[in-house]
Length: 120
Image 1 (tube, rainbow, N blue to C red):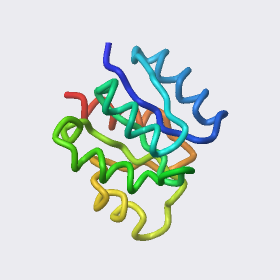
Image 2 (image 1 turned 90 degrees about the vertical axis):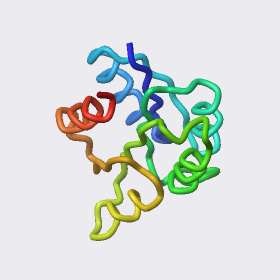
Image 3 (image 1 turned 90 degrees about the horizontal axis):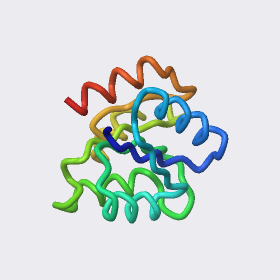
Image 4 (image 1 turned 30 degrees about the horizontal axis):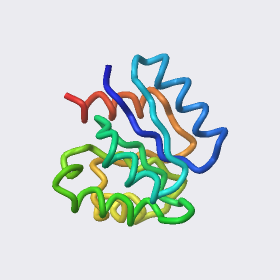
C-alpha cells in the first residue's frame, strides 16, 4: 500500500484528502506546515508528497527545495496542490522542484491520475 504525505494547513481540506486517498487504497500521513513536511518526509519516507504551497512556519516552495536537495528524499515525487492558479504559478512550483502541479479546488480523479502516474 503506497504511503502519501498530505501537507495541508487547512484541517477540512486535509480531512477530505485523507478520506478520499484512504478509499483509493493509500496509507496517508499528514503535516500541517512546511517544517513538519520536511521532518515527516525525512523520517517516514513516503512514496509521494502532496504539498500545499502556502503554509505556515515554512512555505511549500522552501520545503520542496529542501526535500529535493536531500539525497535521502530527492527521488520522492512531490505534487504541488495549491490555490496558486495564476499564470506562472505552475512554473514557479515546478522550478521549486515539484514533479507535478494541481490546483484547488481539487479535481480528485485528475489528482488520482497524476498520483498513479508518478508512482509507476
